[in-house]
Length: 149
Image (tube, rainbow, N blue to C red; front, side, top):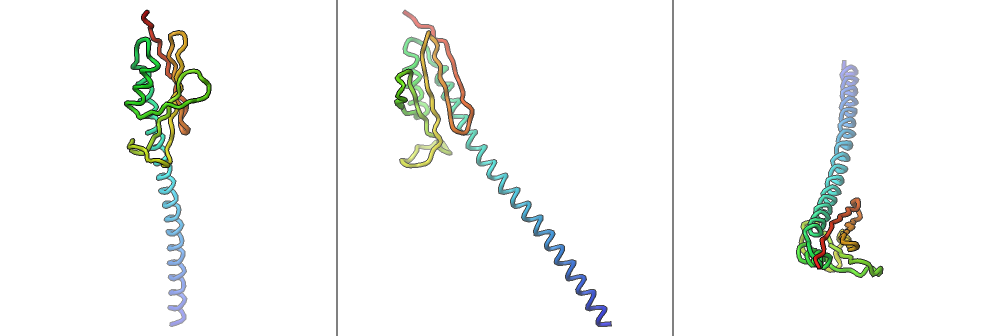
């Protein structure tokens, strides 16, 4: 009789080990899914913040009027979004850089940021701004400026 009880306890122990193993595998799969979801969420959050900055820059470019439209757009970008003028070496138009940070706070020196580049040209009364960032498609904004003489 004790032998029969011994076999039953072995089967129950084996079944318990299999169940624990099964739930361990399920837990590992769930943890991996949560980690991947967190990574995707952080990536999308960063991309959305960059898109907001790009759209704000486009709004600044679209809001200017008059003979000094490129200069006004540059001043507005500097004042509203903290853009910094950059010499692109081409001599055509103006290039500005906005350093994006997670909460739109002031950027500390040496801190890793996500730059947004705005290259503006003004030809034939057409103000064109190409707004680019590493993790987004470029945004091209064109505005006709009626020049008063």
